[in-house]
Amino acid sequence: MQNTSKIILGIDPGTVVMGFGLIKISNKQIELIEMGVLRLNTKEDGFARLEKIHHKVREIIKKYKPDSFAIEAPFFGKNVQSMLKLGRAQGVAIAAAIQSGLDVTEYSPKKIKQSVTGNGNANKEQVMKMLQQILQFKERPVLLDASDALAVALCHHLQINQPAIAGTTKIKNWKDFVAQNTHRIK
Image 1 (cartoon, one colour):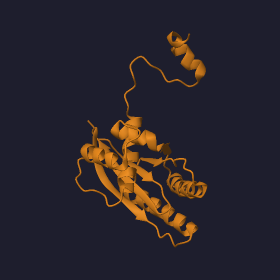
Image 2 (cartoon, rainbow, N blue to C red; image 1 turned 90 degrees about the vertical axis):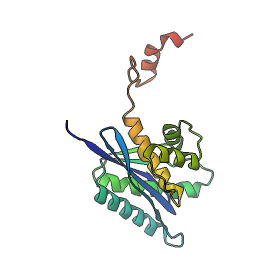
Image 3 (spheres, helix red, strand yellow; image 1 turned 30 degrees about the vertical axis):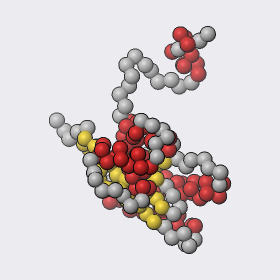
């Protein structure tokens, strides 16, 4: 039997701290490769920081040659300027992945937490502790952006490898939903 392995890169985008995490899936075993952060100088020009994010993502991809790239979607906050900056950081990370020939998958923060902990409202500490159990590591990252990125990678693995529920088919639109759920219509 051939040993097939796959590497997934997860990114937690940010304009001050960008987290990254890599996992390797081999023979249904999940292994932590690396997690870390890129710290950016807040006094530096915003465009220079974006360039550093792009460069770091390309560097990680070149070093580890991941098969998949997943990124956390920006959450909608009250500060429009922060959202704009976060969207730019996410965009350059995505551009680096696409430029490297990787498909990009985006997950909401709630979906990531739900996938990893079973609770879409889990806090960063709960996510990190669950990752420690699943991936069997003891070290606690200095910044939880690293474990958040690792959670993105694990979420991606779990989402693409969920066994289909027996007897169900994919629903593409409301017409399919109604056809498959006639017993729910009143």
